[in-house]
Length: 383
Image (tube, rainbow, N blue to C red):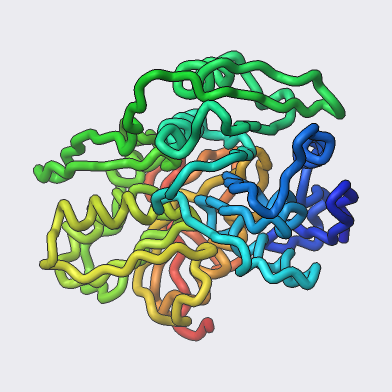
């Protein structure tokens, strides 16, 4: 376990979900740089300071600054669980801080806004627009990231939406972004984005929040799976795992009118988008659950007939196959005997080997130059 040493104290921090093979820390040099900068301010933070922290990956900033009772806004339930577990690890009552998810509205004017720059350019844009009504020219707006993740387009967003912007020198390959609110007009966020999608002679109106993959059109992997969906069967319970905007579940619901749907994702924005899209398509005529959760955490074992998934292969800037392993293992657990997991994936990710190891076998439904659609069936005597 690693210890963050800062001017605000030393704290034990771990990444979440825990992985014995994980060598990365639960914070980076950008967190350290920002905390050091705040400590050295001429007019330092105090108990009257109103502070907002956005996208604090595993809680390094929030844990260190908890005595000031900041508002903390996150989109990922994994980040939220990491924050809670790290607070417990350090005997901190994080409930003294106000936690919001990314779909909840901010209130009042903040003295300090601290942002860990997200990977998604669109989400950063959405964050900055939604900040406008809650900042003043006196608000200190400071963003932090590793230098390689700060681009000219990043700075242009701050300048366009907030105002005058400059960066710090690089320290340990990290930079800070300083922005002052000088815009004369407050504009609404352009998100969610909408587009129409026609599948099987039905047109779906798709609404996507800012931090949802493939916001303005259907991604090619999902499209390939939609072209090779499981033939309709008397499915009772279908799960759209890592649902994003919920398109796989929408089409499965259309093809299987008797089925109940469950949509799961670790992103609040994704599940909110899936819920909106499902309600737009079916109103109150169909039953569905929408769960912000870690893959299939807390889903009843042996309860599903079909799991559909287009697995992500990265968590923020970290690329790996740990998410796919977790998804496939949990899918195996929640599927009934004879239940099926259907996925789409890039050839180089070798998902077939994982499915074979967990389920004992797999079948390729269709393949093109880039993707394969595959499924595995849980054997009758497997549990």
